[in-house]
Image 1: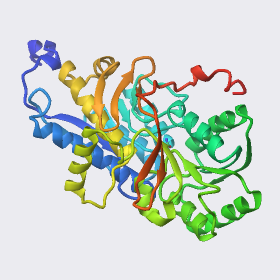
Image 2: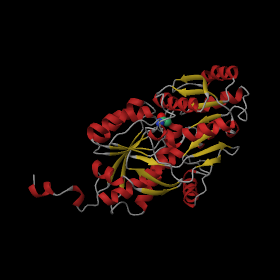
Image 3: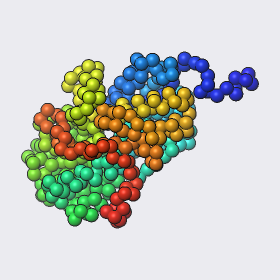
Image 4: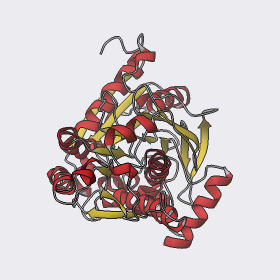
Length: 388
Ligand code: ACM
């Protein structure tokens, strides 16, 4: 080995070699309804960066795997990216179970996962940047609005994995601390088909809650809302409220089926900022006017832009350098100005609540005045969370 060459730090080298990054979103299987859009958000950002000349003159090159909605495959592909493809930065994952499968890989091999999905909170890793909302940025406000408008008897229905169980744990505490009750709680397998939702909707008709809180994800979301519609329930009296039903799932289920139901999200296509108008135009030019944007796509987009800004400074993909440098970084995203909270490595994002309309879009019925600080351990909500 040339002794001198070995001592030159990577970030001082003059090179036009691409920056290689990994991408893990499912284009197939029951999670593709939303993860395909996260892939698109990631690629649009990367193409924009490369069209502008790359980062410090070097293009971004992607290694993309499709885990096929299989949780174990996320962990296996993460390992392959890091060990065989020489990648340390990974953009990916929707479900919390897939994130939990990647976590030990990036922690052991010192990678950095950029995770663009709302989740249940109560996690911290020096090897993850979390750019989706935590419960204090969506559930708290949603619970308040639902209790004020519809009543205090909640029925929970979710997919069977960690995010719905933990998200419901938080929602139950919020409901109870405001004097409400949870009158039913049901979970279905992630791959549940349409027929499995019919007994649940029958049970909901029998129990007569004021609100249904759904933590169903992926393709099954469509079946929940369709079963509700088929059995003649009315969103004006007992709406479904969710943190995961975006414009993508509404499009899949049918606009008439989704109309009148509520979602809390940091971003909707209908957000009225100049930045968002341009973003939606660019998205439509590339994928067609019928393809809506959504919160998970937008987070996938802005986190790559934040990554690029950070890499411009570090000129190195080394995890520690990137992570330290991105703390406190701000970006004028389509949802509004967002930043990475240095305390937790989670994004400070906006809180919004939307009501789905007949055009498959959300009419925004609540919006925070600015981005809300990430509080993944709900430390600012100590009294109402005292039963934890
Ligand atoms: C989720 O599983 N974090 C939606």
